[in-house]
Image 1 (cartoon, rainbow, N blue to C red):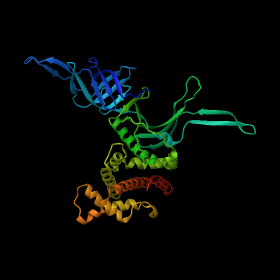
Image 2: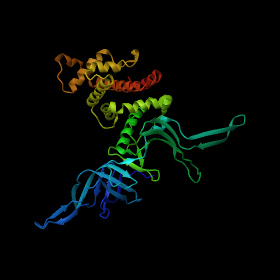
Image 3: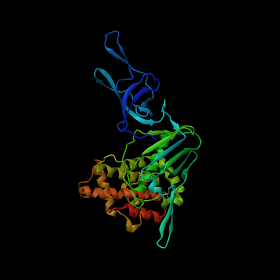
Image 4: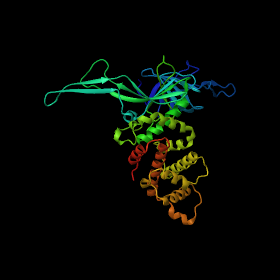
Length: 420
């Protein structure tokens, strides 16, 4: 398995012209390829004697090989490069899209794979069902340990969703373990991945990424932490190895430890109904596409102003209720009221008077006209903080309720989630 590096020195070329290799550095996190030279041919114009650039044929990908280790890279690039001059020679810099590690791909348009394996932070902890077991034998009156047996089982898959095109499973396995000998320290590490398998024809990469994002949204709600995939691998057929996929939005991030008891909702909570739940979850993906896109932005680590966050969650709630009830004329007050009343009466986070405050504050933040007397109902910055958190919990609760979670599990989720 390759070690992810943020800077890769190597040789690079346009996919259709492998003989024209140029040295350069791939900056993965910055999404740039900085060449020490150029792919373009330089000729002298016969008319004015000045250098004239004759552009190389534009192709879909740039390919390369890392100087250390010889790993293969395929890079999507946008339009023309930017130019600079270093010691009298031209140096080009390309802006990049998706990056593929482990394979050279000539064209990425309509790219498909048969299988995808995605690693998420906290997925193993959320599942809490590994393949390593330990048993201890005791002896004597004081029950001293006689022996301990550690058993490492085969990979274990739990199917969570299936339709006519794909099958999704959570696969537990051992990712790190001693292979040849047992030393002083024994390092055994378990992991869980989301596996997407195409059932008929190969699954386009853009469709797989859409599935990954939607699963990610559910995991964010359940775990209660902002997260993104930390590794995506794809395989075109069983005879070939995996290719690592770094989508253009990929960002390397460190994640701390989390305990299962700190999560809002665990797999064990939904285990008996997980297939039904995920069937509803993926069925709702297209129906609420714009709403879930807003939710993804709210859950990302992108810096945001509180006022914009408040407007976004209000817009998500308003849109969700309108689509849910099939009535695009539902007023904001009623939409907020509908979500608030989805929670048992004694636990509702908002008062009836809050509906008007939320509407007037939204109008003021959106530069809509408000009555002079309404200025007294505009939420202060502190009130916005608490209101935003309450509205976000209302949205998540309502989404989970529509999936069919039992009242007991919903109550557990709400008690874990609320912080006011």
